[in-house]
Length: 306
Ligand SMILES: [Zn+2]
Image 1 (cartoon, rainbow, N blue to C red):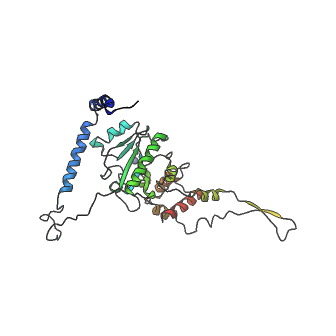
Image 2 (image 1 turned 180 degrees about the horizontal axis):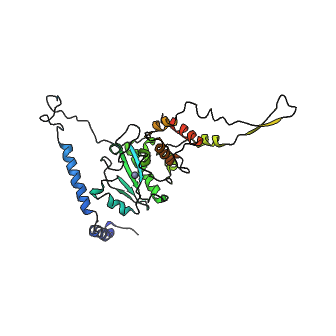
Image 3 (image 1 turned 180 degrees about the vertical axis):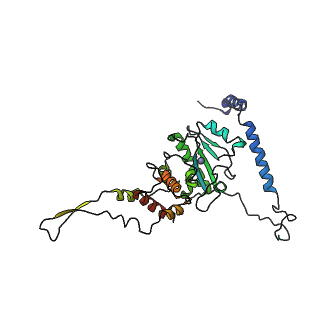
């Protein structure tokens, strides 16, 4: 059977009517959003931005605006869990001015994506944070909130949607793999999100974040291999244990604090930085102590950031 465009017409009209009749509970906050955009647009249109009459700078004889420019682009992605019980709760939180918090994207447990702010604008999700020498992550990052109460695993539909969003962002803004990080990474003293069930290894396999070489760690964990040698003083072959060569795995000058700092962690509170590192990379044992195995992982990983 051949469908004609007129056959679809009643269906289209019905769905259009349904859409227009469904009341959007966020209609008034959407209006507030647009009003705020107008204010910023007006600010951007104001030229020259520095008024010669009020400036103490020694300005040129006339204003000259370059013809070559574009919008600033995000270069980091910071992933969060909401620590709330529903997407609706978070959407409400991010549309109440008094909360002073927001994110570019909220992703529900069902995988639905809410894009709450243009990527070129600054959301308020990082708070007081630091990564390397970057002390204003909000200005350079996209914030993604995952609906999760903070103590539960993430839903598969949610992670699939997250991977789609990350792929889109990485391609659009050419964001380096190592710049996909978590809130706990940039605020180790204050934050523990996303929680220890977050699949960082899976993300890294898709090019979002870095991961260590698991073979190197497995080698370290391998028990000393028994080998048989012929002792020159003995008449019979003697079984000895091959010593584990851990000294050659981590050089003696290796400094874990410096390594954490090179990766990006704020190490002014070293135990907090260690906990944040383990929350991301050693999720089966999140604490403030670096074991020998943890040091192997850290040593292997930090070399990828050099
Ligand atoms: Zn957060």
